[in-house]
Amino acid sequence: MVVATAFSAVATVDGKSYQTGSGVALTLIALGTALVLGLVARGLVRARPWSRTPAAMIQVFAIIAGVLLMDGHRPEWGVPTLLLAAGGLVTLFVPASFKALNRER
Image (cartoon, rainbow, N blue to C red; front, side, top):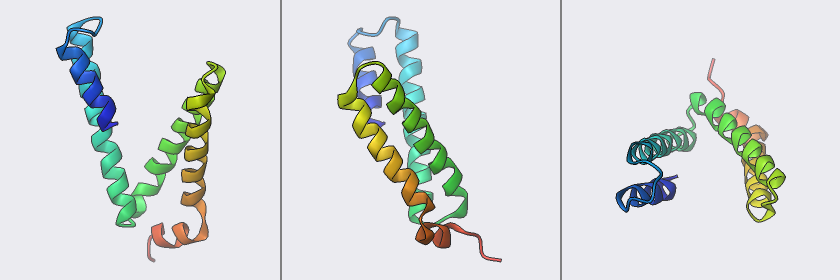
């Protein structure tokens, strides 16, 4: 997402976006998304229970994106997206993850 933010910022500065305002907005949205993804990843690394749901939702959205890429005849992007998202979702639901991410009673 950081790379997408950089590409968006460069395209906006170079005047290649459709409108400058939309290029700036897209860059800010990408930057915000990158920050949120980083926070969720940090929560997972620290085994914080709150991070499981956002991480699972990110994987579900990635699966939807992979299906849309496959539907758009882009298997070179769709297949890796689906494989990585499915792998990420599976790792959230293995017993070790449940043990690490469950709240202590």
